[in-house]
Amino acid sequence: MTPLVPTCSIRPTLHVRRRYAAKFEEAEASALFDEENIADRPRLTPDDFAIYASYRIGTATEYYGTLKVVRRTDTRLLYPFDGAPTLGPFISSEEAICATRNFGNAIVEGDLLRPE
Image (cartoon, rainbow, N blue to C red; front, side, top):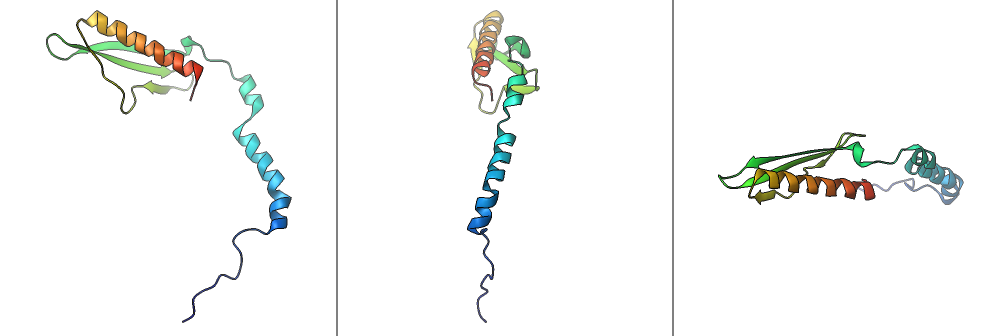
């Protein structure tokens, strides 16, 4: 039995690639980067985020912060994520909530500087 040999080339010939390359590049550029949509989008502000800060009790004298940060414009959950650090332990519930809010504000500032 003889091995099967393909009778046609899988790659398009050079003239076909040259003929349609400009059209494909133009379509990809408009789909990936549309300047009109970026200019029309409003800039995000800290009011576009929801920060939910609370605490939970570990042992009798330990308090851990619980945090949830949501971008309201697209309901994207920014925190917690897989591998997120544990916030605490703290001595009091007020200290846990204050530190958790500060951490949430830092996440919001980071997302405002470099959104996903």
